[in-house]
Length: 495
Image (cartoon, rainbow, N blue to C red; front, side):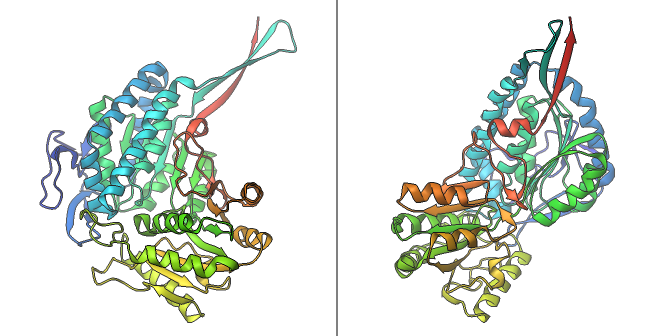
């Protein structure tokens, strides 16, 4: 491995930062910046411009990073919890201090509007703050013994080295949501960010370094060969925990690969969420919330509304309201202040989105807004509404991951509950109704890890995030997220 000068700032005409030293293009192992023998390109999806050439590491460097993390683990594990908390708190403070630069990097490499990027930085940093406090609350138990000369104690200990793999759609929050509880529990980490969005991730490593988090505790592998790196993380016996956010197909593969070494595993996978509007709903609120949810991050959100079910009695009125709000959206480069929706991540995403829309139209759906690529550029897909969508269409079963809202009609509670649950996924569902009885009845019947009633703002660092069925295993967030990185040890003590 080749160490780069830690104090070197990378200059580029395309990213304007208040602190240019936050633009890092080398991987981060054992507290040093690693150039590697190869590089891969990172481009701006809004403009196609080359932003940076980033270190392209492979299996050998990943193995070394795992060994470094394992070596660093005992000292980090045995550190007083309040000392770990202070370091995490410092990292949190630095994230907020450099919020504007982190958001700028995110918008340039990922495409989301700058305001949304800033919101993500605050949201992601809040996980670091929460787990800075939670690190001091890794409680055990004592319990009555069946023998007067014995004592029963249960303690919690860190699981060890964590292999984490994060996606491109939330390049800040997905990293802090995994790293923060792992560090709070006393684990060390080897993390692989998406090759689409490594710049935000590497800036977080620079800030972790400035915060004083010891060398080897966090290691970041940037790569264009996810298969090779994932293979090391899942097969190396020194890695005792895998945490992955991404597609269900890749999650299943990682799960299989982790079986031989029986690792703990957390998976936050795909979704096919239902957004249900009952005839007693506040239609104005429902239409506005759906517009905000559906087209945030250009629809590239795993908890998005993939299927919009509207009760017959309000279908026409709701559709009219929703169309008005979608038509008012401002689409453009995320760096432009008025932009509310930017591009999707790459051409592969465009091809899938367009294929789903064309397939639905061929089978009888009607495009009432959008339905094609915008003249703003190759990766800008117009915010789209499809009416008269049926359960037999391909768009019904596949995760769209783009700015397309398919509208379905339904008549009864029983019908929509059955339809919403008729999917192998179970991440998030939304329901709008003014009836408290209906809210509880339907909310309890829907099969998903997250139920959002009369709101789409479900994000809370103290709450558990995760899915049912093929949407994943385990939970992130709150006390539940800390447990994922701890082992439970029972001690019987003879007096």
